[in-house]
Image (cartoon, rainbow, N blue to C red):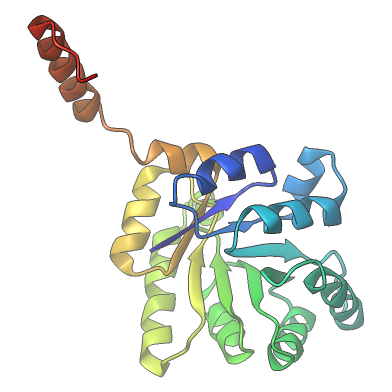
Length: 217
């Protein structure tokens, strides 16, 4: 499974990039607004930090506007992926951009039918939102399972990018189901390394080592 980080915080991205665990970055208008910085400037900086795919979302909702904005965004860097809403115009834009050789991420997916249409439009990534479905007492992980089956049935190359991930268990379950990518907040990605028994074991090892009075150096 590939790990993308869902943030526009360049300091966090630099830290995670240094670990070798980061495969890409996803952003959205809300994250950019939170940064308080210029949109294109932030995307350019992120693309310079990582060689992985960096999703930059269009603000237009009509086909012509999406295409115009996509052409501006993809000129920022070679690793920009155009993020499009899962609407009829968004699918039309996805098809055209794919034919032009531009990678796309179709976002705000909440049903298997939507994911099927995105794959037929040639999307590079489909972003089903797990947590937002869970908020409505709908099993978000079941949507990942359904999309995986449909894509495997027909050999679609669109990658399942599990989004709106809230917990470490979401990440584990997505990996078990076969999602290609998980995009998570920085704190969630860092939290995957944590386990109380790991901490307890390390404390015991350090205590025993201290008793020896020795030093590695």
